[in-house]
Image 1 (cartoon, rainbow, N blue to C red):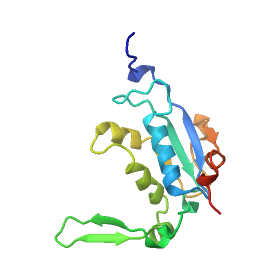
Image 2 (cartoon, rainbow, N blue to C red):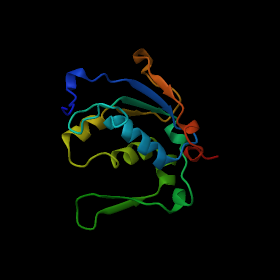
Image 3 (spheres, rainbow, N blue to C red):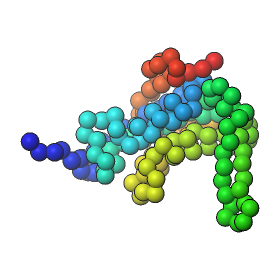
Length: 154
């Protein structure tokens, strides 16, 4: 028996749309990362990009469980001595780019320091509102919240 290895030319990439309104951030990001990598497919190959294109709408309406909305902290560093900056999910969601909460949650669930992971991350499109410009690709709508009762809050 031979081990099957997917070739990049043989992979059919689908387009999917996920409505993030009321969805729990961590569960949503884990599901999206799995779709981007292609781990939901039987022909998954670790060194080949077999994932789908994912469009997330209503990213500004995601929710956190527990007290994470106030207590969680995101850290970044400017590169200068003493240049550590911190922010909370509340500030990010109420700020100019609320879709970054979902983007960064997914990015942190992909493999690190890899050109393959960077390519997989470019297949993610996140929009704060309900509109998206990808109707021409005929995306499949996935009802993420009905997959499990824990996927949605309030």
